[in-house]
Image (tube, rainbow, N blue to C red; front, side, top):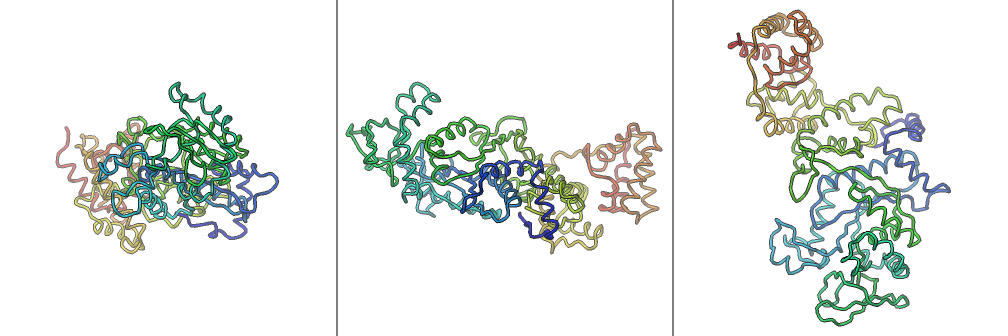
Length: 536
């Protein structure tokens, strides 16, 4: 999705950098928090951004949103601080125990036999990878690669087993009571009685155990527990992958061990982020700068639930629109709970088109506040000759439309366009056809004109017959004038009538542009069809 800052001349880039220091677009505000974190200069290895992923399920539209938004902040920081290295870690919590078998997977009985084992110790039910965790990690990497994200993948299993986390795990053991004192007030009575920040991995079964810790040996770096099946006392190191942390402690441990400077989280994790920040400070670290984003709602305004399946999948979005439209949607108002359903896609596409069209003429301040700058990390690529909304309306009136038919209309309207050779335009045509088929066609209901509307339509048809090659602006002016002459008050009733009679919906495109695209002759035929029956 990125085109990059290299597209800007040096002088213009310098102007953008100066403006970024004060610009109010939220990625720049977030970047300034990171700059303020290091008043005496940045570390030699630069600034570290992180996103987390739970590989018990597959990456989804929320995964895209978090990585896309974090990338926007990272790129804003890079514009403001050229030369400072940055990295984005995509961290997989793949050492978590599989507490339940996800529905819909093959080999359900086999998976049940591996409950509570780390996801990277559960066999892959698909048979393509060495473990279920490895399978889903591969899906995550393929997902992120598909969208061109720049990231470094890290596996919790690898980090625990390689010793990368060992020093911080020993620090947790050293500050055990302090960590427990922070967590216990957030737990219920039953859980409070058995809570421990470490989850030992059973040497015999390989399961991640949630058991009380009965002994600690700081000098040896070990913890002991009573085996829940045999009652035998078992001692394991907290290092080397023999134990893992409860997730809120794990989050803090990871921040400290990796040196994370910035991480986002959903509104549902506010309390967890606060608690993990406290733990990070106990361990002698500094929690990252944070950004809390709102969660999505379904079409009825209810919270989206993976269990209910009431959300929109990323595959569904991409069936109707390109990734940049989804990135735009993620950029806009991240602290506002927004509805996420198929109906928002055309608006996102139209807004992308409007923002991209405005970008070239904007001064630096407005460019940096333009969402497409953050979607592409620079100027947007050239736009197709028509907007998505105009294409949707064209598909609606073109009858049994296909890509070839729509391409012919486009080439008559914009002879320089290449509906076949231009991949962005070709994709947009396919997206419009798919969205119309699935979401527009079932709702269309053209109505008959009344006598007043019919008289105005006759005049419009006659004018189009006398001016077959009229440009869009002339057509728009005449449509407007006809509405005035026939006494439509307010005038929007005339335009609404055109939409309902010709398109079968109550709203629609700028009529002059639409008629120029559809063709004056085709529009006249459409009008004449509607006039065959008129409401008296």
